Image 1 (cartoon, one colour):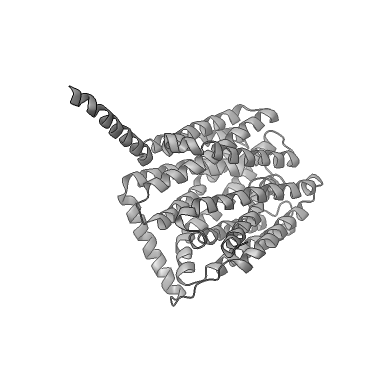
Image 2: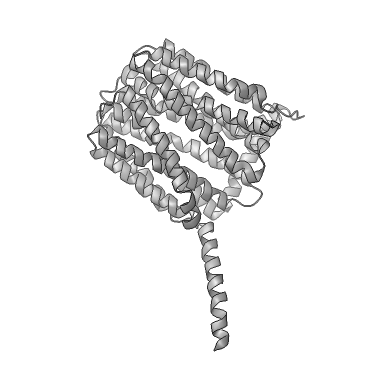
Length: 427
């Protein structure tokens, strides 16, 4: 294996390692365990507290990431920051073993810090991509990372399945922490070291704040980019809220067992991958805006349908549709964002794109938790309310001009003009 391929492998291996955390902790087992056994969810109180956990942690990461990312790059401490946030996540997940039913505040503190560790580490992990792959290969290398991540999620869930089936939750948390450490260690040992710089940390912090303000001003001046990011902020909040609460809804409202939840999430992972691959070509042909609009109609249908679902089999079908919509909306959104970015500003604009995605995850979980709690634990009404995010996002994205679609129409018009010229000359 060449040194370049080895570096890419080590980078993708971190995605394999960290994917066990969202698969087992935030998306399935721990979220259900938190709401059902630590807090109690008969009246929706568990939903309320879980929404707060997600919102507080995502708000912190969203507000701190732009400045901390700049500090890490300009002060030359990116790898150390990646290690720090990874250790924070691993230590807190390990301490989940100390949580007992009723220890709400201690569980909230650990869950918030663990999520901050996971989400914060992604900022520095993603920042390696321009260093290990040239611009023309960043898409394929990024896809390799996603592929490793899907594999890590699936294997992590399969490992957790027998432990959860026997009610050994404390061993489940330890397994997640051990999996994360074991498979991320080669990445820390083999990824390129930080570049030495002469910039002090305090100076890098000031430059980060100033640079983020300037970037925000640049976004506001670009009409279609501004409109798209607003739409993205709204509809991706609905997507993330659905991910965070789908297992909790399936458990509390439909009676899914923990083993069935793991199977459900595996199905969602596979269908997301299939959806992304199936709509890759149509996105190029139809334009990403049209594909996003179609996926938002699908997401709205899923949210409304979930309100009426009473059987596990039907919910599995809805989960497959949601998974396909997940892969489609993520891929098409990134494509439209890429088309709207001015040349030469790709890296910083995608940083702002990530900021919008993380900060948007604050409102939806709070809305879901508040609706469920205010209606005495009615999760059907809570999940129905998420449809509003998809509908509003659909309306807002219609205001965006799709540059790829406009380019296709322009080329078609040019061809029609060329083909009509001989006929006009004959006359």
